[in-house]
Picture 1 (cartoon, helix red, strand yellow):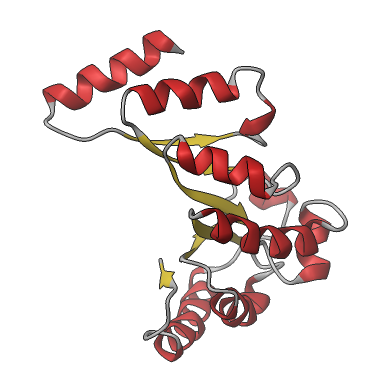
Picture 2 (cartoon, one colour; picture 1 turned 90 degrees about the vertical axis):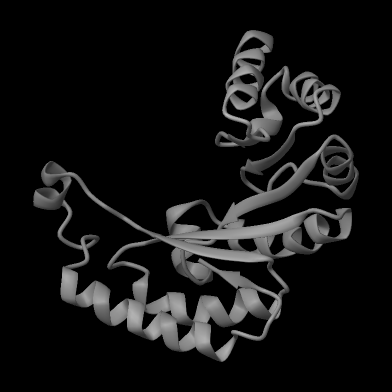
Length: 186
């Protein structure tokens, strides 16, 4: 950990850049050296984002992460409740919505990411309204891109190019509706 962090700092110094690190997991909080790593970030004045799940977030945990330099916590919402819980696990939609408030209360930004497939693409416009109503700071979508092998076996997830264009048009209309809101859409 220390060696990799030193390499990051040295590379950023050479490039005249400020380090900003994204930690991801599953759930990075569960790593046995998680807090030690965050302390190293703090010692080196490194700001960072965590991309994790909501299940171990409490106000105390979020405040401590923020004090150690965590600027943003990113959660996933891959559709409305039934669809998201199908992709993740039962109850995770409600837990994610509850933890948005906790993250914001701690002082961190909240980012929500949705991976879009044919399964959930029709729910994303309503999800845009929802995340904006919750005061999410950043909302982003990423297209599910199956491999050629998975395309052959998973015809229900792959979005054809014209379908994706229509989806993006719907999202753009929602973004325009919310353009003066607090949420940044990506």
